[in-house]
Image (cartoon, rainbow, N blue to C red):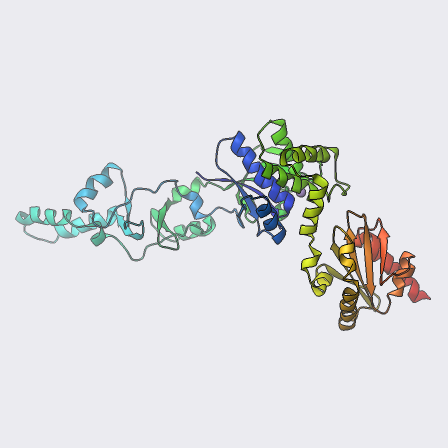
Length: 450
Ligand SMILES: [Mn+2]
């Protein structure tokens, strides 16, 4: 049976993986078919840690859902034969099933060659029509009937397809050749099945359920060729189209995990502790431990239910998870400063602002002097007049801004705070783009006028 992939967006985050993995369990308990949670990209260290910590299987990584030759194959292998089979045995086998092309395989299903009705007919014609004495016909026929598939199969000039070949390519190759059926053979020469032009007409697309996104540019490659069966999401509605009406659940809540949790609870579907903890993780990370303005009452309500089922305490777990995701301690000073650095220019003045997220600002406090030394060195090397490192804590609802460079005094004027140990804590400041960069631009312009 072909699986229905339940897949989140590219660059998978906790919410997209949590909702895919949990929704697989939900579908298995409420629907017919084979459902498989998938990730539209490799899992980051934080996700590997999370799934392992909760003792959950990793979802399959799927990079592309475009239609491939393997999607055209039947579940079962079509009729095939061994090289030892004689024409006598093959006669009734092929004629009763109206087989015109018969693959010859070894015991391990390794592909050896093709037997075609045309080649067999040619063999007969050549033997019978070579002007031999008509009295010898019984021997000739006996001799022919004793020939084995392995001796008469075609092994050269065959057109073979690979299972992962794109269907578009396969179509081109079929049009360029004149055969009726084509064997599909994998990298290990294993016979996978036969395809024909007829298969192309009734092309079976890969079936997907999208979670945590609904826009093409965020979706896995090849999504335009796949058949979307359902969408569960909490983002703005984008640009994907479907051929048929689908189950499309979109709701402005803090996370997709909230919606998947609600499906379990509303349907009274049993939810295992590990999956409940995973859904709780999706809620806590997407809502930034309830600090994000996208947080709704439903997110809190679902989190309380998931706390009860998983035995995890939402706030404690949220903080632990958040520090794993934004693990500043595993980065060196240089990595930390450069991880998310943006450069800006105002006239001839170049400055840089980088930002890291952390749960507790005190984690960075011990590293303050070595961070500043790294930043000073960077200013000298890259010619920044000013460099700011924003250490932002959603949880403390503010940013510690650490500064370096010859114009660092400017930051004191700009934010009307004095530097303490090279830094300033700014309550309520979370956004580099909206709350820090414009202020620095303004201060630079003012200082140039003086
Ligand atoms: Mn999300």
